[in-house]
Image 1: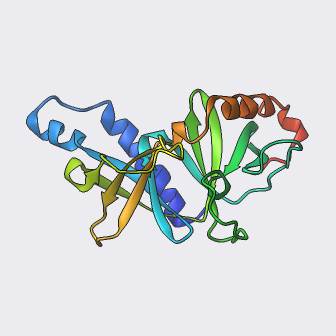
Image 2: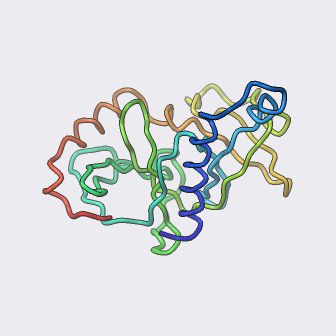
Length: 194
């Protein structure tokens, strides 16, 4: 696991720990308006997901393919005895495909509607807190394509834009059901990756 992945995992654990010790005063209210996001790259663009949805970040692992599934569903991994379905976010978002890079391509492990899913991204960059003033939520996006998983655009400190995703809405109910069925494989049927 890269140093950045370890930092992201430590930040996630620290955020979860701090959330349980929040004190109801004006300074903690101001802190709650800042949401930390895990920033990652896809097709030279920056995306972010709430850090609270991230369990961990791992390097590219051995993925066991599953036949007769949508192209974005890459297969299954065995992560410390737990079977996790893996999707390629590039394919799900209809971005051009690109060969995975062993030292950069990462899998973000998240909980989505009571299901643990691995999401392949080009690279994990950093953890950034955006306050409400930095996020634009009223986006004029064409209704011809379903995009309810886009929750806003954040203006980063370097003046670049970060597209904020609701990872729980990237997959629809049918896709989640398919992934849930595929994840019910015995762990000894797959190689252990971690």
